[in-house]
Structures are given as structure tokens and as C-alpha cells.
Image 1 (tube, helix red, strand yellow):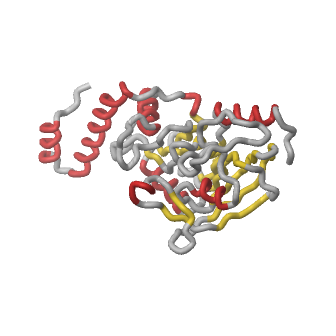
Image 2 (cartoon, one colour):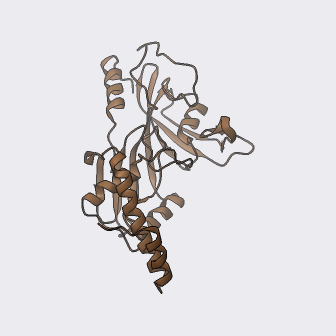
Image 3 (cartoon, helix red, strand yellow):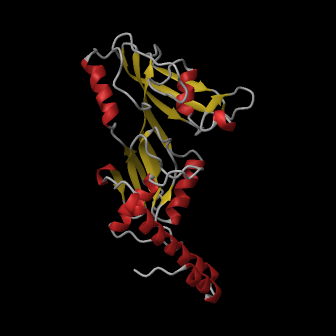
Length: 289
């Protein structure tokens, strides 16, 4: 495939009477160049992680430790957006009128696994983004905590603020004076002695909201080195086989971007590490509901 050089691109812009047509052409060229340069260094996308797809969207079971898109420092390019784009283009997916072929609709933290939605065209992206911004998307997360709550359901309504500076980079905190409103509903799914399996429904989308609100409720995650420096060991199980943040985006419900009368419900099973954790908990304990 012939890709125009930078000098040829400048000539296209100068000679094309339709400026936006030229911009779309440049977008396509840039995407082709990026694909050729980056695809050789990308980890291949695992097609078994596709939860749902059609002409407008694709939903993926993101794995823990993986970035959805490059972070603000752009130090890492081996991200889900790029790997999925290479996979879809190999399946024959074509760019839309803007020259783009894949749009991230929302993000999950690197350490969080579970459902992530991508749009395949600009219109689907615009529609889904509005749903997320207006909080019309229902979300359920699963988490495993230090301690099993006595309550069955609990609401944490605590404002959150992003910490600034080198010490605060990528972290948040509860701030009753200057924080932004944040609210999370928790429900106990299972109790395993001094370990809890909880479901969280965030009504807002602040940085690390579920992790911070779980701590605020007195039940921090089993493993969270970003916030919990002191190691924790279960009095019943001893050390648990876990080296990742046990937070999983289990379920989403939203209106299909093409047919708003049709609701989609997408769920993602636990990954290997969390499945192994549940196996250990259930093998060593009678579940206490």
C-alpha cells in the first residue's frame, strides 16, 4: 500500500478545495502509518475477550493491568484501543467519514477488569458519550474487601477530590470541603469469614470512586498498593493468592446508539485471578449470606 509522504500531504491540503475532505484523508493516512509502525510491537488482541459487537459498537472484557487508551504522559502505546483497532481492521472494519475507525466511549483504571465499550463510528460515539455524561448508563462492579460487612446494603455519599502534584499523581481522596459530589451504593453478595464479596453501583464517576468509598465505609479492597501501604493477611485464610486490585466492572446497561428503544445489558465474567480467589474462598469456607 502506498502511503503519501509529508510533502505529498501538504500538497493535498493546498490543492484540495474541500478542506475537510483533505483532513479526513490525512486522518486515514495517519491511521495507516500508525498501524504499520505500531502493530508489530502490540500484543495481539484475544478475540475471546469480545463480549458483544455489531456495526456500531464492540464491548470487551478488559483485563487487569491493561490501559484502555494511552495515559496523559503517553509513555505506553501497547493499549487496548490500538490492539483492538488492529484486530478489527484485519477483520475488514473500515474507517467512518472522519477517517477514524474506533472510539473509546469510557475508561476503566488500569488495575480494573471488566466491560469496556468502544464505538465504531462517530455517531455511535456521540450518542453513547451523551448517555455516560448524563448518567443514563447503569453500572455494577464487583469487589473483594478486607472484612465482611454486617450490613446487607449501604450507601456512601462522600465528596472526592483528585490529588495534585507528584505525590498525588493518579490518586484521589475524600474531601468534605473541596471535593466533588460522589455517591456509591454497596450490596453484599457473599461473606467469607473476614473477606467480603461486594457489588457496587456508582451514581457518579469520580477517580477511583469505588475504591475510596469502600475505604470510607471501613472495608478497603484486599489488595490496593496505591492506597494501602501496609500488607493485610486474613485471620482465617492467611495470605491470599492475589496480586491485582480486586475490582471488576461486571455489568453495564445502556440504550443502543442506533435504536434508543433497545436496551443492551453486557456482563463480563471474572478473570482468572479473581476466579481463583473465589475458588480459594469457597473451598475453605461455608458461604455466610
